[in-house]
Length: 344
Ligand code: AMP
Ligand code: MG
Image 1 (tube, rainbow, N blue to C red):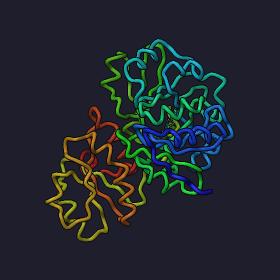
Image 2: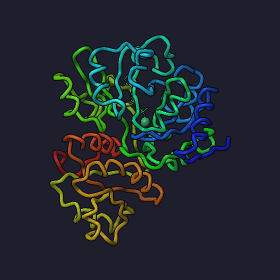
Image 3: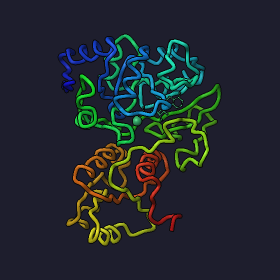
């Protein structure tokens, strides 16, 4: 199959019409969203959704997120609650996914046999328009090969999916750069399953009772059942070994020393570029600019592989506020390899 890449053009919707026609016909399309690029198919088409699992090499027990073009469309696919509408009013459209009991119209292939469905209404105008034009909710996981860093540009999608899907819509780099915040809700309780741009602090303004699943910051223990099946898989992993350096270690001295004997790439802050100038650097933004670091994370991991680094060193992010999403992705990409901190 030839994979076509069409650039989104504000004045001409023909690319988006083509994308929605493919989706209505049971095909897959690479779709830009504000978080990462998605691999979309009709959420009502079990066969098309199985093709998503095949194209990604995704384990069959890892359910897909269903994307809608307005919050009220959740009624069709899920049993909503007043808490859903409170959250929707504040955070939708936007990078928040809400897990609720599913309705029968959603095939069990989408939810990997679970009786709940994950619902998200993206704020990206191209994603929303493709859903509208398709006339169906769109099931879409991130458009990477399973286990690889998520794609934040159309080129990343092409690198992973060339020959497997007919079309990718290119709308430039994603603004957030990590996947949506995923929460499970009941009438009066929120459990955070995956951190993203909508933070615990923001959710706590809507609901008093917000807890964070231990899988967000810790490794799953043997035999422990993941609330969100995706949490148990190796994720975001570059081919290189990634080490995270805690802030009780002198980062500059450590990486200068390691670079003498290792083929390594360094994910550094912009302020450190001058101090590390003879080493292969992947700057990810200013020390205090968590949003920029988040936006650039997956591209940096992919570039480390492209340049053939065998080791990557990066700063261990904090677990506070917006940095929790960065922390979660980086500890999983590194398989919890931390230098310093409580690990000594
Ligand atoms: P991705 O599609 O790559 O953004 O991953 C979607 C994430 O949402 C994965 O971690 C899934 O395990 C999780 N997810 C989707 N649907 C459900 C559900 N019904 N219950 C729990 N987690 C879900
Ligand atoms: Mg993913």
